[in-house]
Length: 185
Image 1 (tube, rainbow, N blue to C red):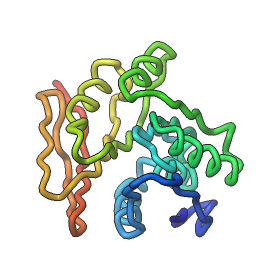
Image 2 (spheres, rainbow, N blue to C red):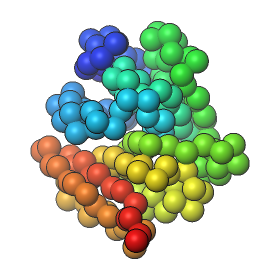
Image 3 (cartoon, one colour):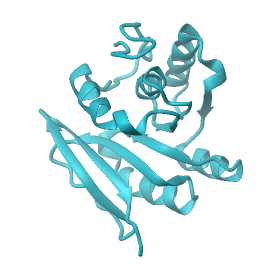
Image 4 (cartoon, rainbow, N blue to C red):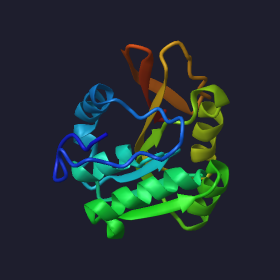
C-alpha cells in the first residue's frame, strides 16, 4: 500500500495489523483521484471508515488542505496515526477513534464542513445511506461537496431526494459512486 502521486508519491503506508481489511487498490485510487483533481486544491477532506487513512493521505499529497480521519477500530487508528506521523502531516490531520455517528455529531458541534468525503464502510453493514443522510443532517457538507463512495459493484446506493448520483465507475468487483447534493433553484 502506497501513496501514488503528489508530494508523498511512492511513499509506503502501514496497513492495520490483524484486520481483514479491504484497502483501495492502486488502480481504483488512481482512477478516483484523476476524477477528483479539480476538487483537491485546498479541499477539506473527511475519510469516514478510514482504515489506514490511505485515501485522506493521498488527498493531502495531491493538494488538499486538511483531512479528518475517522474509524472505530483501534488497529485502524494506530495504522492511520503511524502513516500520518511517517508523512509528517500531524498539523494537517484530525484523527478520531469513534463510531461514525458519534464522530459526525462531534464534528458538527465543532463547526466542521467538508469539500470531499470518502465513504468506504464495511460492504456488508448497510451503512452507506445512513452515513450519507447523517452527513447532510449534521450540516457537514460544503455547498459543492462531493461524496466518494466505494462499494461492491453489484450494490445500488439508495439516495434520498437531497442527493444525486453524478457518476459511477466500475473496476472489477468494486464500484465508485460520486454523489453531490442536488442544487435547488
